[in-house]
Amino acid sequence: MIYNDAYRPILGAKEEHALGMPFQEIWSDVWVDIAPIVQEALSGKGTWHENLPLTMLRNGCPEETFWSFSYSPLYDDDGSVAGLINITTDTTSTVKSQAELEKSIDEAQHLIEVQKHIDAQQQVVQREMAHRIKNILSMTMAVVSQTMRHSVDMKDAAETITKRITALSNAQDVLTKSRFEDADVGTLIKEVLSPHVGEVERIQVAGPSVVIPAQAALGMALAIHELATNATKYGALSNDAGQVSIHWKTERDGGFFMEWNETGGPTVSAPTRTGFGSRLMSRIVPSYFAGAGESYYDPTGFRYVLSGTLHLEDEMNH
Image (cartoon, rainbow, N blue to C red; front, side):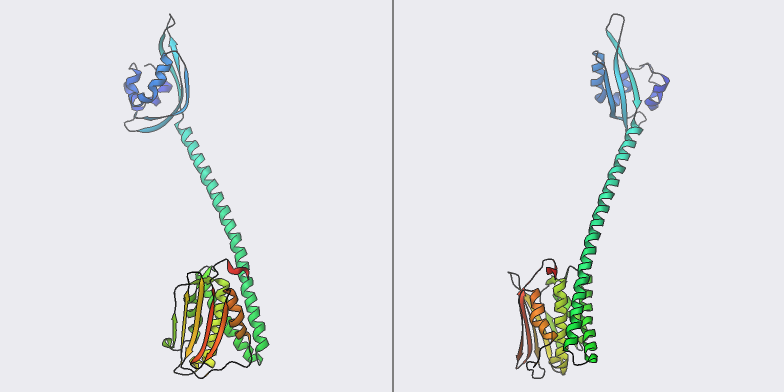
């Protein structure tokens, strides 16, 4: 093995005793990889390899390297192959730099895709928020206009509107925690009832975990508020002995049932006129469940029954 000065750094620590030694002995650590190439050159065929990976032990530890080189046969005077000449370039830094560049490009492309996804999500969120706000404003407008229409005076209207919008606000708190996707019936009812509960044991709430769409939750919040307000003014919560029980259940086919039941209160009778609260419970809220809402004035107390189907589609676009 004979080499020039430019080849010396390639040998690393092996350079101390490499000159004049057999090529196979010096490069025994990579001989499995290069032996076929050497044999090809010694058979009279020149070869060229670009960025060939070789794990070398030239400095006492495994080292990942890359090489671009040619092996060309060398002939003696009678035309026989007497050896080979190796022209080589260490391309390790170039290959690794290229790999780092490709990695950086891949990461940049990934970040671009992530940003596109985030932008798309933001657009969805913006559209959804606009939809939610329109729903809330529509319901608020309905509450205000219907309450004004059925109130006896401005003071009564202002008080009723404030309480109804507070009920909507409480429902919104529940929806905010669930990212405006749906609301748990039990959590919603307890949140709306919180301002009306003087003694917790007088109101019993029981039922399985059931989620309903946001718009249906707003309607149910208003209905529960109306029921609690009427119970406080005229029903079971207007005295010291009355009680209210609220329970709900679901069925395998998607059916939904909820009952508000008052006992121990004053004798109740059907109202002589119907207002927004009555329409809300008999028509508006049941529409979110494709069902019916019925009010019963039993001898034992007022009772409200909501029955229908759970709609878990996207908001029913109201």
